[in-house]
Length: 199
Image (cartoon, rainbow, N blue to C red; front, side, top):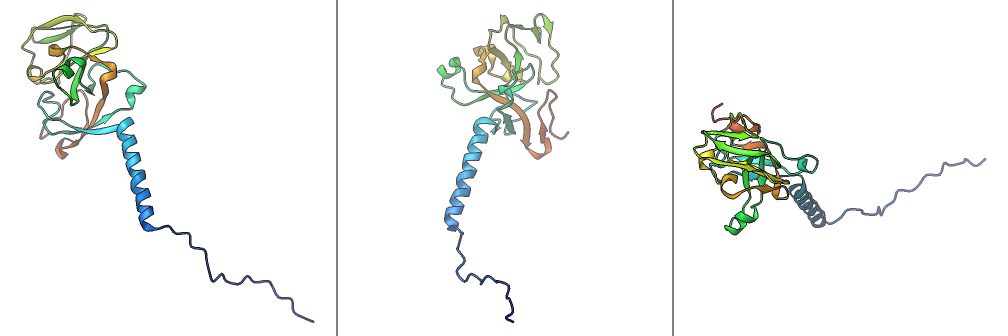
């Protein structure tokens, strides 16, 4: 009797190589990273820094922020939001090209007036705990046009804002400042209450 042998596959002495050139792999990785970074910056969020003192005490010069660019696709700006926006037509005529950052104060259709060191919305005083000093100017009354916003800096007496040049059209708003990531002693969410140095 002849013994039956189990068929055994012979080892493959020439396995097919399925590895790519490491340079091509690196280029793919870098390319994908660039595309993702651009997509996130263009549509989701981006980092910004504060170049002036117009938003003190809430935001200090050289603070670094994350700006949420996505949420305003699903919601409208609210009073108190700190928004980053591209220059309006009036500002462009004055040769401003960089984005601005200010706080939304007046919403479309609202009557806004600044008098006696207070901001009034529809004849009611706005309670503001985030400003550096009471405004020492008079402004208005004005009615904010549809689709536009009145914005002011928290450093009311040292801010080039809506009381000088007018309103911000909705389409000029890039996004809302949501998180400060620098300096380390003031890292955190950006809300209506400023976080001061040393707190």
